[in-house]
Image 1 (spheres, rainbow, N blue to C red):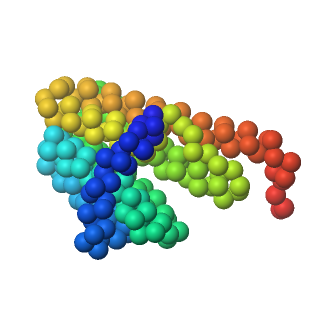
Image 2: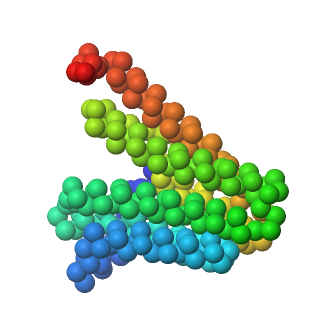
Image 3: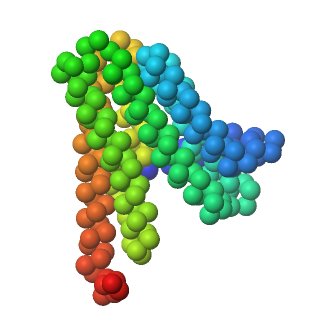
Length: 213
């Protein structure tokens, strides 16, 4: 959904990328800093329960997920290792953000009530779909099919999580956060199905679909 905003966003952060490149910060350094910062901020948020501050800090750190590509372009183009590093650390950061919510939940005295339980199990499903969405694309490309489609890309998922945390941190009922995470889990399931369906379509149309046993 938010993928259509990628180009305008890239233009917006271009001055920041040029500044980092000018002082010698590499694209890989930006990737590592963004991921490490997100993991630290996520765990601090989960332990302290400071959802408002945590969501804002992580929103700023998400900017670094876009900056590494822009810095790489200024370096003359990204590298294969850079793409691998970015994708790998993205998975760790995604896991950390959702794990922060789980840590927060299990520390609450009313954890066994309805809304915390909805949020807990939705977060578990969302973690699974986050990894499988990425894996489906990578595995599809490994067998020769491209599947970038889906209703919820990584940027969509992060927006849903952080907005839910922000609204809850502003004082809205816990049910609001639970609904956001439940929607995230549902969209994740749909996205996984969409990618599997896309690869199935491509495979069925491929006369060289058979593999040697």
